Image (cartoon, rainbow, N blue to C red):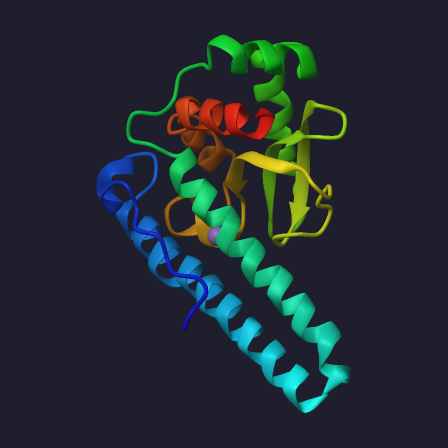
Length: 199
Ligand code: MN3
């Protein structure tokens, strides 16, 4: 039985237009995200087979594959719920307070996070996360799905800057994609995730 399945989107693929095209959402969810789900299940299966056969030399590669694919599945699952046709605007309440405490204000956070997304080299993600040991918000710049990951940190806002996330609509102008994403961020979803992570 497959351990992981592709979650449905909470909106039609065209619902994020004009900021994100239906074509991008369809391909990104139905092909890219799906590939990470399948890759996670395949890696688990291959780990079982390697264990059964005692093929221990396969472990490093399979563990790497599991981390990459499961990281991708998890991050995309957050990304789709972080975006909403009703998104945009500014965070309020406790989330706004926490951003202020950690980064000096909502605008200061937005400036920082925009630069995190724009300066990511190659394929990666920008993450706003809750770091439980220090009990604070942190920003991370991930390579692929897991390089640079701060162990134990819970992602609250995860934005994909792989080229497949924007190239079909914005070509090489990542800055225009990032501007568009700010019009879609569901602060309500980020706030819910912060509440859950703190609890
Ligand atoms: Mn992606």
